[in-house]
Length: 122
Length: 297
Image (cartoon, rainbow over all chains, first blue to last red; front, top):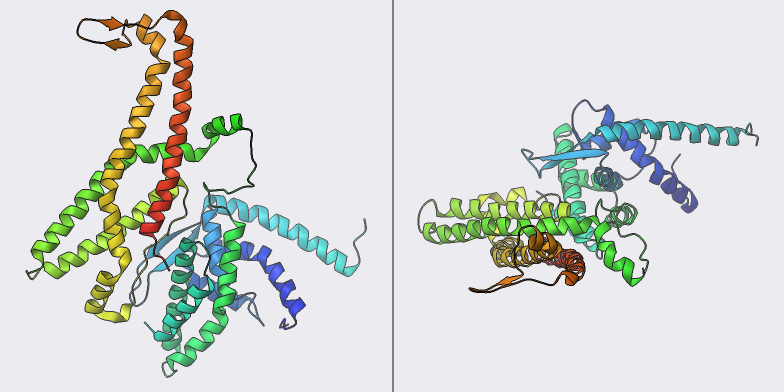
């Protein structure tokens, strides 16, 4: 579904704010070797069928912030044709965080699903 | 690479006005990396496509400058930098503020930087002075231009490394990689851009000024540290090693026994003052370094 209405876009944006870090951490952790921004954006686009989850430009600041908090690390490699590329890889700390975040995500997802289905009782 | 990319970067920079300069540099290099890579891939997969048309789609999925700028600004507000955690500003009683310096990790980073700055200052100064004089001498020779280029690039590399030291030790956000040049300018165009870029010269100026600054920082810090330690150790020096307070050719002066607690306390007081001085100098130096080493608007 393409979120065109203002309130839909706002809702999507707020959802993304929380999930982008989890998604990026997971994508980088699955890569067999260090991966750069454009590849990450491609993988995410391939995974979201209809509409990209978020603008690709908004992924980069999340990558930077994950690196700042030590969950990712990066190296800059020169490229043959263009500007140098920043390659990201997950740190040990990042893997631990990813495991914890996956648990948190599953709990939340289960809760929201059960509320939406009406099967949730206090 | 492409005028449309340059135009996008200029609009992104304008949209980022007011953000941290290092954030702006990060955002610009991220965008340049992404757009060039995406364009290159698009031209490879569809050889017939017009670059401008391809770039239109690429920019559409990357996001408008305003959107991307908003994402960076948001992230800047959300994640504090490892050392430079702003935190809520609580006005503490004077006593706590005075001793608080002991618990501030930046104090020790600054102290380390002050002691390190003499060594780095000597190295930077020697490098800059040697590079400049050899450049002047070689300029008439065939190796002149390559030498000047190598030297100017090395100055920018050193500026980046110094920035990393300052971010690690003083906690001031600095660029994480070098600002690069357009690739389509060619050798001569790149050289002119390097010469014409004020940040090349401000990096060299920084390297030269680092020697006098390093000497001043080192001297102030070492003097204060030794003075504090000397005062704190005074009772031991007096009574164990029989070391006088002041010694002239014929006379040695000792302090009376009752003054010892005061002297030791003065020593501790001075030690804490030293930490304040180091932290203050570190703070000032970080701001000054950011002015010279980070490209302005």
